[in-house]
Image (cartoon, rainbow, N blue to C red; front, side, top):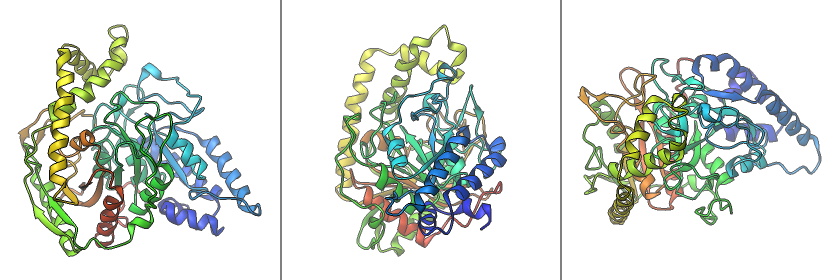
Amino acid sequence: MADDRLCWMSAVELAAAIRRKKVSPVEVVDAVLSRIERLNPTLNAYCTVTVERARRAAKAAERALTRKGARLGPLHGVPFSVKDLIITKGVRTTWGTRLHAEHVPDEDAPVVERLKAAGGILLGKTNTPMFGWIGATHNLLFGLTRSPWNLERTPGGSSGGAAAAVAAGMAPLAVGTDGGGSIRIPASFSGIFGLKPSYGRVPTYPFSSAWSLSHAGPLTRTVADAALMLNVIAGPDERDQFSLPSSGVDYVGALRGSLRGLRVAWSPTLGFARVVDPEVVEVSERAARRFRELGCRVEAVTPRFSDPSEAWYAIFCGGIAARLAPYLPERKADIDPGLARMIGETLRWPPTKYVQAWFDRLGFWDAARRFFAGYDLLLTPTVACPPFRVGLDNPTEIAGTPIRDYEWIPFTFPFNMTGQPAASVPCGFTRDGLPVGLQIVGRRWDDATVLRAAAAFERAEPWTARRPPIS
């Protein structure tokens, strides 16, 4: 089997082939490491590659296959990557900053523990902006990450390294985090699948700067891979007091079944998005109409949501500023200029601004709760614009209209405020060949229906055969 074919196999396929001894974990890991060696100097998706550790783990996984009665996990021999905001035992974790350039944790985060216990093999850490503060991927420590679809465009962020790695065949599974869209934005920009599970479904530890907004979840090329991964990483952990009890759901099994009769809302603005690229609307609206053919009752709506951007900005940016303020002014040179400006702005706020943001957040949830009483799913564009130029913190305009920072992600951060499950599925391309994502938002705690809807759309509009030019 050719090396590149191994790199493009899904995690489900790899796990099955390894169990049947059609391929070996060593072959798989060597093939992916070879691809990383070839492509990563261009993409800069990985900031740390654990070559020797991965090869040792692959050899151990291969030996286990020869032992009679050995209990193999569902990801036995399957490689995965971890975003550099998530701690990994014995492997450098920098949070994308020179402030922690040499930090080596002495324990794994729960999600990493569980992937390893399931037989997964850690390949390394993927690049992220400093503390995940923007929806693009670059930092002063490791530089910028490029999109495999167009090297002059960003793969999104803050899980941009994770998404670029998966999209380019440099691992079938990646762990990302999402405090305002940081799984769904890069999934959309990189032409892959990304799931932000319900808040607490996947335990997070240590807590992030935006702890009440932050989720951990999968970035994969197929929906089935994300469901398999969620089976492994979901469930309570004492280190995260907000982690949810086990749902008892088999997320792979939940992919089966009809969508017939589901009430689905489609909204290109959510009622408050000021500007959305017309081409993005065209592509995502066409995708939304496909849900009628899948048996859903689809209705175009304009929800009566108040704009939650100021509340989200106060909670998200306020958390990061509180974490980093002690480093000013002595180490200001080690903080991204845009982030330093944001910290300065945040420190001038009155204390009541943060408290008011929490009241406004509760008000937004009440509106969302009432809206979802009438609908099973909500469809939106994932991002309001196509992938923008690499190196920018934020785009400066959409379709010729100037925009403010973060105004290009009006569809993602609201559902960090509510904690609802939300996914991005690839739904087409712009005329310039740039990926566009469709966001699927579910009711509180209903991850299974979001995954089932994504899987049905994937069967109707398969996307994995189209690979980026760098491949």
